[in-house]
Length: 194
Ligand code: HEM
Image (cartoon, rainbow, N blue to C red):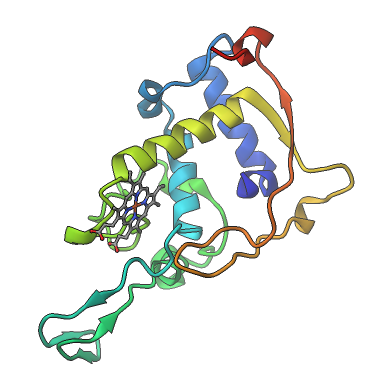
């Protein structure tokens, strides 16, 4: 949501895709996700720049190994810095630091642990076993937030003023909680509880 509020063109494009595919008479459901490629690209781009677990889970090398110009002896504690990999210009180009979901449109790059340049759920036998649930939840919740509401920053706040500082730890949340103003954009009965 923070990246979308800083990038109104992306937010408009995402809203247009949702209106085109879903219409305005119902909410987004899990089955809609394969028909929302731009929304999928937004989630991938967010996970590239803001991986939930920036250093994955620590590993211990079980045998001597060499990687690039490094020798890694048995018993070394190894951290995989997916935050840095996700922002490496050698991999992502000169605009590596920019939020640009278009880079994933029509690309086969995925977050499922096979493409080592994009590992928000890790990889290998210790990769996240909750990927199916986690990914779908993020996609469906974000799609409904964007589809169900017109979002803006609080009065008087320019998009350049929105802090994007992150708090480093095992996971990496925003340093300052996001404040944003939602305005319903669908028929009233869709907001009623069950
Ligand atoms: C968007 C949501 C999520 C993200 C981004 C995420 C990310 C991760 C990452 C990066 C790891 C470490 C993988 C590695 O080091 O290779 C991990 C581990 C793990 N995740 Fe998730 N996760 C998410 C949701 C979930 C959910 C919903 C569950 C459970 C229902 C879950 C359960 C676990 C468990 C149990 C591990 C430890 C696996 C092990 O060490 O063998 N995660 N997750």
